[in-house]
Image (cartoon, rainbow, N blue to C red):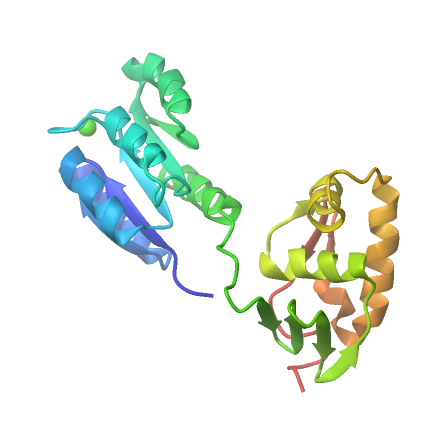
Length: 236
Ligand code: CA
């Protein structure tokens, strides 16, 4: 999986540097802007996976940066995590109206912030693969040809199983609720019981053979796909 990119827009030097240091330590690629104008420009040209945005900024204030990012067709899907001081509580509400995705109140624990960052990056759905094919440790899915190969052997899936597998593999590690899966894999116009998802997953696991356990049950939520080799060794 490629390294996620994060733009930090924060004018308080110490805090900005602390954020950059900790995010880099987590393995993210980070850029730091110290005013709203520079931040906006970097976001528009670099198109990071996430923007961490302070509200009180010189030149262009945070909320205006947020508004412009959410208005731009290339930047509107970038999640924004707002940093706000306690005195700016009113602005938190405004921030959400402006389309911010989450906020953290200053002072905050760096661990808590990193947790929010992980959640936001996970939530962001990757763009559709232009080749319409996915590949993960021995599972190859071709959506144009509607074919699936497991350890280089073709496996025949029903249309629902196929869409289910595609949905899970496309966002490995993401926990999908049964409702999510029904919507993405079966079309939200179809009325199905949540148990129906379990039946499809069971059948799909069987067809995937030794890769079946890579569709993990997330207790109380639904399912997630494990992006790694099957338990009994690497892909053959
Ligand atoms: Ca500030």
